[in-house]
Image (tube, rainbow, N blue to C red; front, top):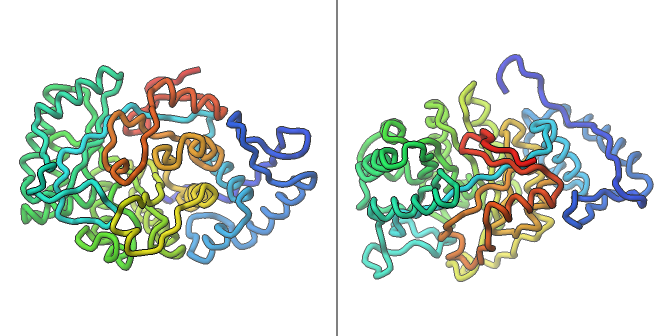
Length: 408
């Protein structure tokens, strides 16, 4: 938090039940989040008084503090996170973006144990998209009313920095208003190694070529113990953070992510959040992390699930972690649930547990679906209706979370 800002306290907003029996409804989703009956206001009051004694503000929560929050009843952590959401984003608006995921190559030398998408260079299904093929995909995107791409791919040592520089320049010439939300910290680190250049050099070159923002993919869990198990050839946790630190210094908007529910401990989850929060404190007046996206490990047919006994993340655990993220990451403005991995109804519930953005309609998605996730049909009208059904006003946004159109 920059100097002069007032620390953000735990909100103490009264809960007004919306039904006669004293339960609280989750908008118009049709689910009840039952806080308590009859004695709800009294319990909430005493709970917040207790929290305020050991948690006067959220700037510097440590692992013990976060454990205490995590162990609260689900209904209470939802209540706190929802209050935080409205303190940070006070309007009853939920945003979304029309975006196309474009995977420019599926060749990857890392071989993460949770990934079914990547292949070897000599595999008959391997590909590296030509510029004209990417152009075709973007023409289709514009027909959907979108102008933003999420461009990511495998770590392919045959793809040099010049591929990206020339591609970005080509796309900006063909589509002057196109927004390139592209690559990720592991890709940046890999390109720097292949080119024998610094990370800062690579980021500067990409920005000059037309990169508009940097997604937070490849974070998984920012613990090197975990990373050595699930993705030993990928960049370290410190390297991931350093890429983002440099991006923030360059005022390049970014996002942060977490993939949880595999071999990590609760403490490692909490330290992940702390590392992201503390890096965000260093951004000054620059964009920094604009959003945080949380998704559970998708296990089907992965090498990781064959090596370890891994229990699927439950709906309640997902909502608990999302709510916790909203509280701990007080300095990141937007929280996004994963409707792709958890389903649209759970995403709607999350809008009452700290989330305020529904993400992309995902015109194309290949990586998560390769792990067995069936992508629901999603259009702009569907995502707008999901937001309305949950009790909010939908707004179309861009990569900087600037609202382009609010649908009242």
